[in-house]
Length: 326
Image (cartoon, rainbow, N blue to C red):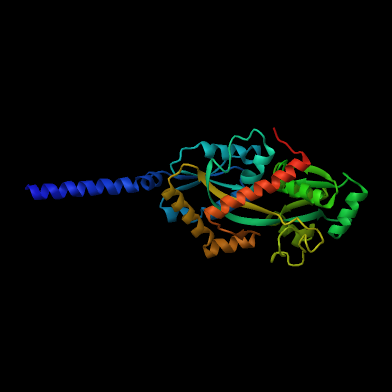
């Protein structure tokens, strides 16, 4: 081999080394399954959204994608595990408003910080809550409910998916805005709250549109108002809270996507784009809309600002209501 050939081979070897170094983070991530942590049990809104989002991600990323449900402490256990995981692009978090914006306000000893422990990729979807009553409850609109609450403070039971849940804080916000008081009944998940409303064991609740719309349409629950800015296409005859005469009650439950803070930006960007393509897939978007979700797919910058805004909003509600979870 002459000197020219040796020189060419050395240059090629150097080029291969440089190319490998440039793509090494991506290659390292692609060589292992992507673990998508949902910090709640199967069947809830976050789990449902995660399964829609990850539906096409395996083919998109050319790697296995596994959903790992890790419930407990209103999502804090699963979120903490992601915050502490290796920043290698093999772990992703899909979680709700509670994990990103409510837990920091309600849990003084929270073991993670959503604004500093994660790279916040996107607010994926949002859905409003619906103020519903059990069948046969003797009110037909929001004003009548307020009159009942003022006449009998603490007598009307409000079901929620748990202490510190978005449904709970929506209830507290309603009481604060209307200067009323009811009896909060926290359940272990919104599914149980809906079941007890259907059974007539609870009176009222602010619950996700996706969880209650089938029961409203069947007449098993009565809808008084919805917390969105405009009426929902799923429940076009149900007024917004503003239309019902109550301001300050535009509230959404939402799901966001994040990875550990120090994940390589190239890998984080690849994961974000895969999430966007899943959310904008016509079939998946159609299913999400039919289940009461609005696809947001916000940018990283917008999601970061939104989390700060939401945390500030719910911190005020929590402080006013003096809610704490040790």
